[in-house]
Image (cartoon, rainbow, N blue to C red):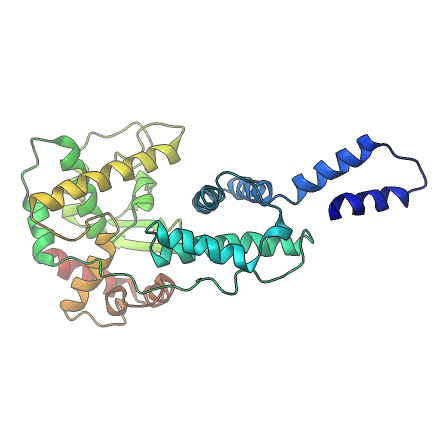
Length: 326
């Protein structure tokens, strides 16, 4: 009713006359421009246009979660309140969502709300001041070198999909915990004169890794593809992002089976390699300046600051020490 009254007053202040159809059109136009769902979808589309696909996916995930809480009902920005966000957080907890994920969703929704404030779609009322937006320390994800060895020595010739998952896991470990998305987009041209150079898609940091025999042995197990990519993750042109996501889902699923085969109770995923390399490097007396306390920082950003400042030959030497133990 308040919005209708405001629209009527606005129309009355105009010199020209107006009809009920004008009021209805203005009312629906207001709802669309002040819709939380519509605004967030527009923001996501803009991120895709800027080639920030991963960020766009996280925004879509947060929106889908919030809309499930709302039972599919949209909401206007001026209805987003502190009480509503506390109810959403309680709903997430009741559904078994971990606190880091709760914080993740809250931070994304807060960013969208703040952007709407900047666009003068709503007044700043700080609806997220009473919900959790921090970061908990993650449960240790590293596994021991002996367990890496057992994974490496498994006879998986009976199942090619398991063998592929194991090889991708090992390649990531060999390359200092390279993320799967960076592995997927590695190009043949990134390998030159015994050095693998690539730019992390997450941070845009350029890394250089000495190419070791064990890395070449893994690559040699697969036929040379007609594509520009080094590894058999993206196998054709077009829908590269979908191919990467499907491959990651497949590999992580198979790694759970591999964990069962070696009696590993830990949750084995592609991300395990990053924690494991850092932890094992530390156990090999590699200085903290080379690898910052086995990923013990509160955020990956701090670790990257350490890595970025190193003489790359020291990092390569640390990698050689670890690979020699396999």
